[in-house]
Amino acid sequence: SLKAKDGTVTLVEMKPKTGRYHQLRRHMAWIRDCPIIGDKEYDGGGDAMDLRGRGLFLCSNKVSLEHPYYNTEVGREEWENLPDNEKWADGRIKLSHEGDQEGGKGIVQVVASIDLPG
Image 1 (cartoon, rainbow, N blue to C red):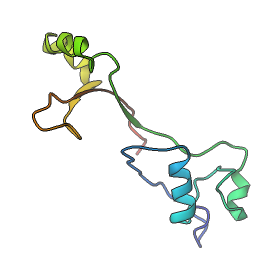
Image 2: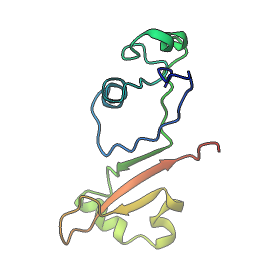
Image 3: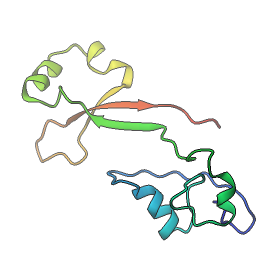
Image 4: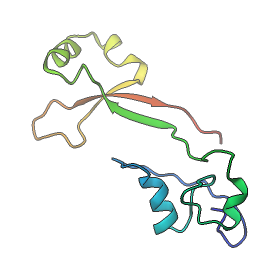
């Protein structure tokens, strides 16, 4: 954060399971006292104001969403009958059991991700 005493910028990895409007921005600014760079609403003024107008320095490199069709009763039956070479879409579709009920079939998720530079 630009609030650091030495004036450095820090890359922070956050892995929210769920989210609400502005949740990450508020938590970083209020709880950690490290606002996200470019955040006009929660930057707290000071040195962080120098980067206002350049946009919010916040990005996501991975998003997982529940598949809108394959998690319906009809869609799940169709998905289970797909051959494996079509079912997983080169890793862009996965079956998650996180939060699944005991004995459940899992949740079909669509996954999009990019690698961050090194």
